[in-house]
Amino acid sequence: MKGQPMKMLLSAMLLLNVTMTGQPLFGQQFPAVSENQRIEMLKHPTNRPVRMVFDTDTYNEIDDQFALVYALISPELDVKAVYAAPFKNNRSSGPRDGMEKSYEEILRILRKLGRSSEGFAFKGSTSYLTDLRNPERSPAAMDLVERAKKSSPEDPLYVAAVGAITNISNAILIDPAIIQNIVVVWLGGNGHHWPHQREFNFRQDLNASRIIFDSGVPFVQLPCTPVVTHFTTTVPEMERHVGGKGEIGDYLLKIFKEYRKDHFGWSKVLWDMTAIAWIVNDKWLPSDLVHSPIVTDNYTFSFDRSRHLIRSVNFVHRDPIFRDFFTKLDKLSKK
Image (tube, rainbow, N blue to C red; front, side, top):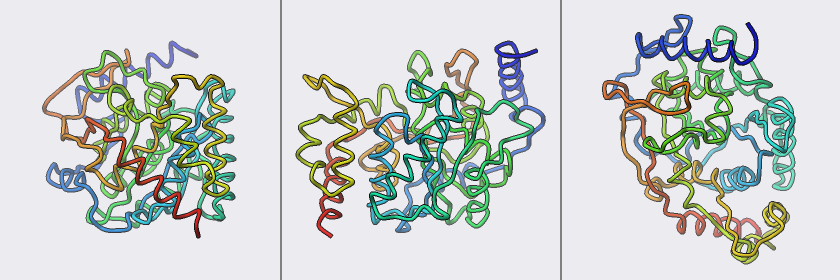
């Protein structure tokens, strides 16, 4: 059995197994994370700077570049590594090509910031998650496993992810024990009562998305529609506050303006910056503790109030986030 029938069978088996036993397909065992421990880990981090890694499909469009720069220029954060995530759209021929282009874009951003990529930037998965028994041991997944092993529930590693969640789910399948030592902050999916979950990051790798919702890993979700859709900006704002702010500012303005030819009456959502912003200051992105929904084959959610808790962002205060980014970029340009 090949292609779509096999994918449908795998998805159906995974959903049935999770729903009935609380364990993913093929008897994969995840360590128990007590609800008290999970709630504690889902509080906003107080230790500064926050140790984190950043998983990004950087070439997918233009918001990833802004998010990567925001993370690297924020003194509240200690970015230990950046992972290239797979993607497929009109900018790539498939997940491998998307990952490779994302890796090259990461290197480009680092060069413009005068940062070394050695031991810092890692290639991720070359395909989406299809065989849960044989997760891809990409450099990104293995780096995450090693860093997570050195962390603890009291001092977790924060994993900000803004693309398909493939790299992170592979790492969890490689060593399920890491869910006790990490907090995943993912821009993915839509609001829990939105009619569907066919959001780009979520739908690219349905199996990987299921792992995040089902494994019990402490998880902060930033839903795209109708929450992060508020996080928009315009060409005039970018020209005023980003252009002229050093080589990196000029590059960000360039890719922003080139994203669309007609700028009249146009604004652009810079989705991925919000995942970084939550780690910097959660007051800008209020949230609730909710029961983790069940991912269906139809790219929708079903609900079971006996399931574990996750944190879900419910609103974005866009002004203080952009103000923070513009201030830090301006300060960087004056060094």
